[in-house]
Image 1 (tube, rainbow, N blue to C red):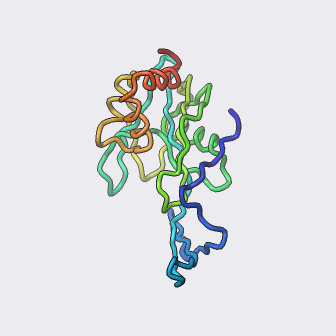
Image 2: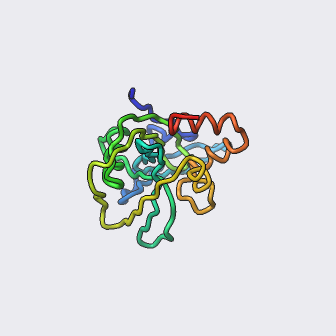
Image 3: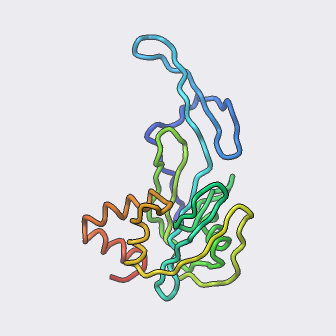
Length: 196
């Protein structure tokens, strides 16, 4: 897989922006702009680590979803994935998250999507397909998550992603668009599981 390019935000963080607060997950940046009325104003934007979401597909063609519990959050069905650590490449993060959350490794990786979904947050979300997944270890979860794996076929995968309580809006949006176009959905099926 070739190097994955980071998508550009609809409102890029300007070079003169200064970090005014560093948090555990979010940093706050501010910069001054001159309004159309000639008066100065302070603009602000958040920045957070990028995220990888993975669509793992087993050697038998089953897609792995995760039923997750996290403190202070209602349990939800979602994709496998998590944060890209500092100085970590996107594919490295995806491989690490797949192994930690499922105990599986993939034979083949395909970039499905890369977006910056929120203009006021400097944050890229990468969705990767991991084909030919094989179990090599047990889950190695951090103390703030419980994950139960669900193995589904493509049709069930689409139904679950399109459910209103699915946790990953970026993937949900792509499949909602494809639902209106049978050719696009067939293209996604072929891309994800390798068959029509």
